Length: 134
Image 1 (cartoon, rainbow, N blue to C red):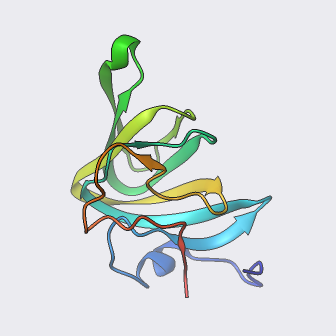
Image 2 (image 1 turned 180 degrees about the vertical axis):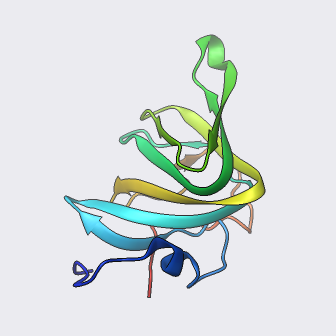
């Protein structure tokens, strides 16, 4: 993928697809994908052993459950439009959105959206390294 020659309107990019949990690569910078995704319901518990995961909520609300306490205790971080959160590498997490949301993600190119899943990946979840925006 080459860098775009024009500015990218993120709302326009999000209007180009409907699939949930199926990120689209809008550009790349310094070996990282800049991805947008539409989400609703629950993703899958997973971890990324070699990289942090950056979330920016563009629209809506997202909760990220984390198992990062002693003995794997869970906590939840609630994000709203404009919120940013970084899940540290190796931390098991599960994003979810009750009413739907759109996200921007920064991940090293080639990073799977489900990292190392902690169980079976449901059919509605696209275990991908990102799709070209097209």
